[in-house]
Image 1: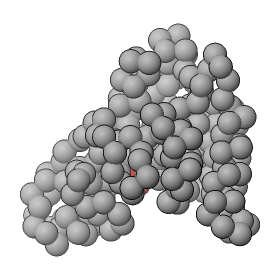
Image 2: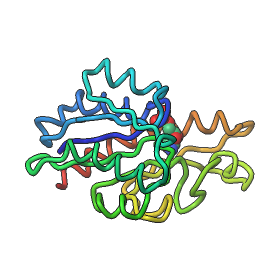
Image 3: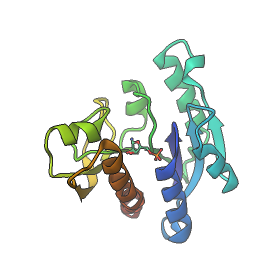
Length: 196
Ligand code: GRF
């Protein structure tokens, strides 16, 4: 498998996946490697990390495209450069802050996953941590799921739960969840690779 990771910013989940792939030797175990990291923002910090690891990087600025369809078509073309009969792509969304078109999602059906910082089906969309606090939730967490055309839906692959603690702010809760995401996402991907 050629894993292609899409990011928009910090890329800490991407880095966790890259680290796990090397540490746990996904190449020998699953014939899988992180082949490319693609960002829709040139200033995404994660790009530097990926480059330093010798991973191919691409920036595709969505603002340079007239429509969502045009952007997604260009994105598909870049991703499919890493798609080979003996090494099909697995597309991993890691903090990729763009909504994908149904055409894109259909093209990668069954090989497109995302991590979302809530216990889906609770709190799809943005501002998940503040919404969990406002709702008085006592636990929060993250969900790795298959991507379908509907935002933050699709079959759940794995979840991690953290407590909400007295005095939590959206920032402290986000940090607690994110540290679990870094364990959860590589584990969920490894499990997916082991099944294929
Ligand atoms: C993570 O919390 C992820 O679940 C959400 O955005 C954040 C991205 O962080 N979609 P990073 O770019 O992986 O550091």
